[in-house]
Amino acid sequence: MRQFRSFYIRNYPNSLEEAIEYFAVFGGLGWDIDTDIPLMELIEELVLDNYGHLYNHIIDMTLGDTINHALLSGIALGDRRTHSAFKRARISEKAGLAAIHYLCQTGIIEIEPSREDPAEKEYPAQKLKKEIEKHQISDKLNFTLPFMRFWFSFIAPFFKGIQEGDYDKVKKRIESRELSFSSLVFEKLSIELLKKEFKDDPIVEVGSYWDRQVEIDIMAKTASGKIIVGECKYTNTKINKSELTKLKEKSLLAGFEADEFVLFSKRGFSNELNALKNEMLRLYSLEEFKILLEEITPDEKIQGFPKP
Image (tube, rainbow, N blue to C red):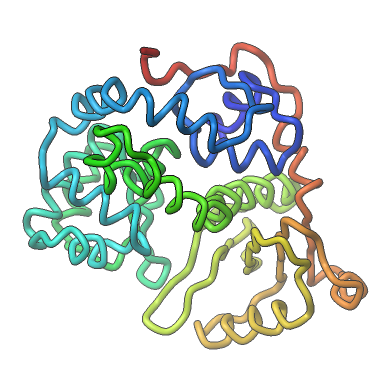
């Protein structure tokens, strides 16, 4: 949330949609950018043309360790689950856990524990070693900077071509995944919006839920014990009633009864779904995310990567 507000105050995008999609690429970089320039042009100018400078800074963060880089690529290109990242990276569990320990300590990634087997909600340094030793390989791993996720999703896999000045493959890859790539940012911001909306009955626990059978974008618990489940759809179509039906089915399959359902949509909702809105169903379109940007001040700017 701090990074998103910092990005906004630096660059003042023209819309929330633009803010999310540019933030998914440049979030955490800490550079002033011109969001009136098409995203792909900015990627070429600021990232691809500055590959060497950015690579050297990332090497400083990761120690240039091949296992660290393999793991980060495995996280970026997969479903973020620990065991899947190890498999993609082609590294052993022992090597992977050691890499996680280092990358968490340096703040490059953070652990999102499985809600199926609740763990500590935070991972300060004194708790991290204990959690790693528990071998919780069903947990997920998150990048703390959106730009690092972008780098290991799109830049690192095509480094040879980029070094030679051939950007065609990386551009095609970005264009094919541009919309879906922003979905994770939208999901994280949806959680922040949900926390703001439940002021009278504060949310005390929130995150994604997954087990061997089902995955749900948001599962939250309030101070009064109320269970809230939600889904986030960052697509160019409106959400209809079938999405609510699927969410209810997934909740039952996961084995818990929700007190409230929440849907977040980039493009809004069908008339049929809007008509169902009540105390057990909350609907949030992109316009309502403006609350996250209220009372922003210039001192919220966060410094990031050094400029070339």
